[in-house]
Length: 476
Image (tube, rainbow, N blue to C red; front, side, top):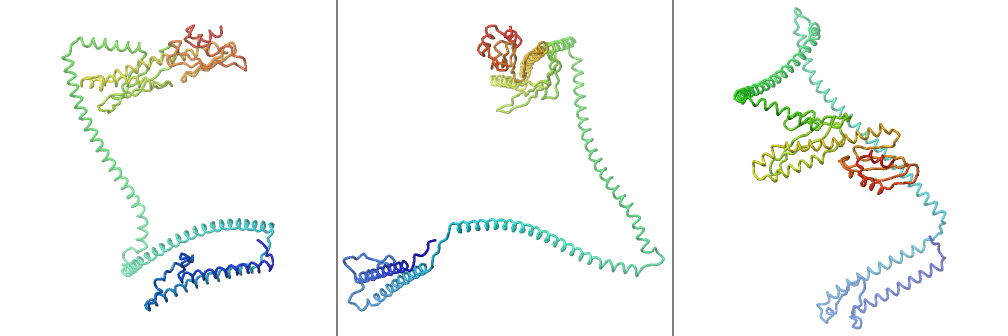
């Protein structure tokens, strides 16, 4: 804050303000008088707080214009009075402001005041938190008290109801006692007998409820059995009819048919054996399980199980599709299944006649045979990889080899102190092009003698088709 500069400055300011106000008031009255007289030199002069009053047409030599002139003077006087009051209020405000003595405030006091304000704000926040916590506590207490009060009111109402019910009971007891016959048993004996019989009666009621429950469950089970018996009877009738038809067909068939059937069974068994299939089981009408022999490659010892499910897909017409997955082996055959289904769809789309389409739709055997054939081929290559890995680990235990069968990535160390990483295709080891060299690194900071391009060119030139052959070629 600024301090006062003494009485001289205050008096000079007051005198300047008074002079300016007098000049402004004088100019204001001059403007009003000129406006009222109708100054032709400056007809547009008007006060910023009064609207322009054009009374030149009213000041005519006519007695009827007296009322208009009187109205004009009243309006002019009211506006002049407003300006005077406003100016007086401004002067009083300025005089009071100048009359208040000003004092200097040091920066230290300002800092202390700010610190006190901060401390007060901190205390205020803490007090606010305490107040809110107390408010929550009081609110919970109020809710608890209200709940207890409601429970008390309910208990009082129940007690009042019990008292109302006890009145007639007391009257009945009094009447019974007054009419009590001494020849009969006393009331106490009757009450004791009632207590003795209460537990047997409760036991009998519980047993009765249990028997009713058992009876209802027995009735429902009986209804279920009757329904099952009816279904079995209908199935038995159908089977009897089919057996009779089969017997009739057996009596009428050609005797040479049995020999043909035996030959077909033996041929099918031999074909399955050559295909490496041990068992084919139809779980239901839509599910088929094919178990491959663990001896697809000697020494593999793993039997893969192919689980296939047949489902219908509605896309304009019913078409059969097959879903298949392998068990006991971490081998993905989704591409084989997709390929077989796509071939089936193209075959279905290429069938022009309705009979061909129905055959393609209702007979998915060519899909199943294709999946089985491709899966057997992939299993053979898979078991060949396993066998080669086991042979490498057994014959050369000191050789660094890390083979991820599922990912198809092999890392081997050669005698020159280098580690070679090779990526194998899913068809490995059919052809030398199934191996792709990924990287070559030196062991323990040694220099790399072979490069990726050198090893890849060596594989292609010498037609190296196996990891064993690659190790022998690089170590020789």
